Image (cartoon, rainbow, N blue to C red; front, side, top):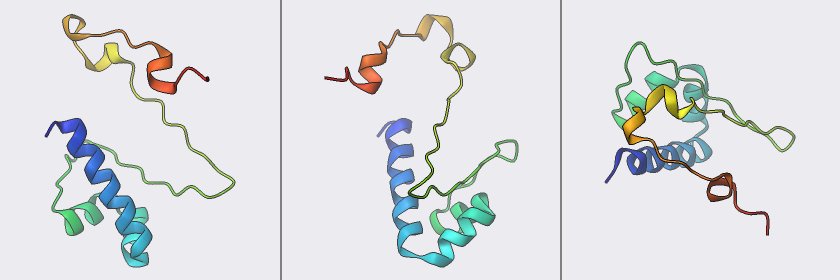
Length: 90
């Protein structure tokens, strides 16, 4: 399983647990690193900042990831057309 797939699976598990267990949800919002460590055994580096927010019906959060040039060496970059990520609207 790739790191991206593992990350997606973990995100899904965290969300499902937060929906099912109010105490976990509260802990995740208050201290996300501790909540992930306690519930899933996930250790996160001290220099990584983790922010957990909760959407509601009137709010939507759009996360802008780092530009690929900041994280992927030039030789490994690929071009992704916006339609490949967002659909073509049709």
